[in-house]
Amino acid sequence: MSNSPDPDRSVETDTTADDTRPLTRSPPAVAVVDAQSPGNVGTIARAMKNFGFEDLLLIDPPDLDPDGEAYGFAGHARDDVLPNATELTFDELVSEYHTIGCTAVTNEDDRSHVRFPFSTPAELAIRLPTVEAKTALVFGRERIGLTNEELARIDEICSIPANAEYPVLNLGQAATITLYELRSLTLSPEETQLPDVDRVRAPEPTLERLYDQWEALLAELNHPEEKRAKTMRMVRRVFGRADLTTREANTFLGLLRRATERPDEQAETSADDS
Image (cartoon, rainbow, N blue to C red; front, side):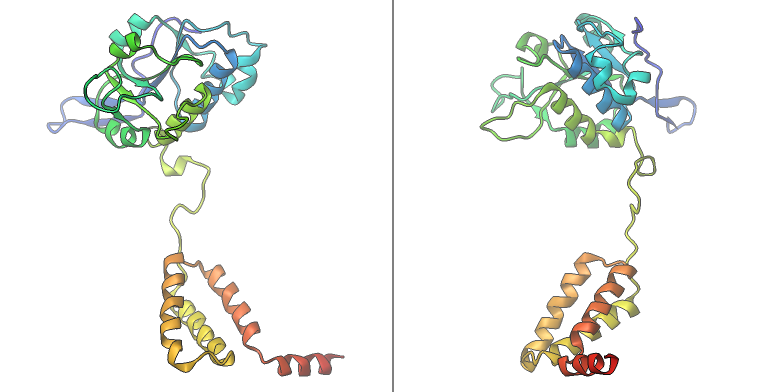
């Protein structure tokens, strides 16, 4: 592990209104306070790798043996995120970073500001891109998380919405969910593995042929004529919301054509083929 934070790692460079001073925004670092399990540290490092985060900060970490549990759980993060982690004290963390403490237990009102107010990870994903500050997401121990004394020294609070009867998540789970929600700070859509970000809707002539075939099927089924217009409006709205691709529309079109064929015509075709 390295011994000092890297404040200069950034993902975006912009300029101010007068274009005289470069503006850099770095994605948040991930800080883990007093983790007891090396496996949880490895799990968090792996989640960081999954969602594009690089800077891992460790306060009072367990022994991270390269042949042990942490590296075994880290996946490909064993090559960079985990060995490049920075060890520092809690005092250094709160003095050098804008800190966001992650906790499952929050106050219900504003009578105490130790755990209130708080943001959800999704709300942070909207706000943090506009903030120019060296930021760290702070996760606490497996059993008790962050103490009230530690939370009192942290700048803001984040909490994952969960079942009120059991809101406490495993340390690795909490970090993974939070980093997933904040992935827009580190990854553009083009950098994820998901293809077809923009759906390509089937052209209108193809969809109109599909609707014509639906009308033919309704007639073939002797659907009450006075109900056909209303049924077709429903069909159009269902398929309209679905944004069918060309392949999907053609598949449905073929199925409807087969379904519209008269049973006696199918029987005649089978007899001719035999």
